Image 1 (cartoon, rainbow, N blue to C red):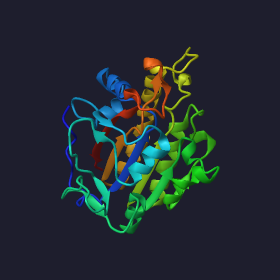
Image 2 (tube, helix red, strand yellow):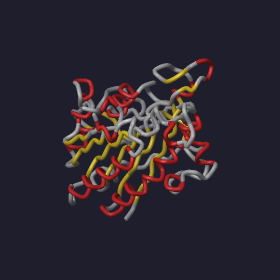
Image 3 (cartoon, rainbow, N blue to C red):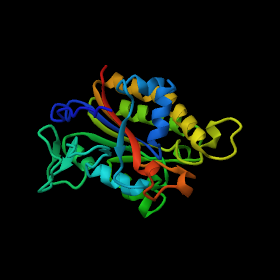
Image 4 (cartoon, rainbow, N blue to C red):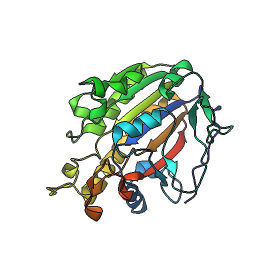
Length: 271
C-alpha cells in the first residue's frame, strides 16, 4: 500500500486547524476490513483508494503511545524507512526530520509548540488516561490550554463519540478566528464494545468492527464543524490494537502483531 505523501507542514501550520483523532484500541485488520466492505462512508471519502496506511505504533497501550505522539512520533509506516515525520521537536541527530517537517523549537511536546504558534489547544478525553480524576489522568490533558472529560465520554457510554464530537463542535465555534489544535481520544472502540452489536454478550472482533462503524457515522458532525471554520489538516490513527484470543493473547500492553499494527491516515478538509 502506498505511503501517504508527506505534505509541507510549513504551509499548513499557522494557516490550518490541526486535528489529531486517536481511535483508541483500533486494530489495523478491523479498520481495513470495514473499509473494504464499504462500511465507513465518512472516513472512506478521505482515505486513499487502497484504504488505511498500515503502521506500527510506538507503544502497546494508551499512555505510552500518546506520550510519543505528543513528542512528534506518530505511528511509523510498516515498511523499511527512514520515514520523515510531520512534526518534530528540536532534537540533535534525528534522522526523520525532513524539509517538510515542522520543527517546534525549545519545546518537549507539539501541544505547547502549537500554542507558541498562536493555536488554541483543546483536548477532549476518552479513556481513563484523560479523565482528570487523579494525577496520572491529568498528566496528558494538562499539556493543553483546555481539556474536557466527563463519564459520558468514557468507554462504558454507548453514545460517547456523539457526545465528544458535539463538544468539539462547540469548542471550535467558541474559538472564533483563532486556529485550533484539537485532540480527541475516541473511546468507543475500546472494550467494552459489545453494546454496538445487537445480541452480542462478549467483546470480540465483530463488536470491535461495529464500534468503528458507529464512530464513522458520528464523525460527520465533527468534519462539518471543521469545514465551517476553514481549512483543516486531520490526522486519524489508532494508538494500539487489542487481542481477542490470537495465539492465546487477550487485551493489550503486550507486543503481539494485532496490538502493534495500527491504521493511519491524514488528509485536508476544505470549506
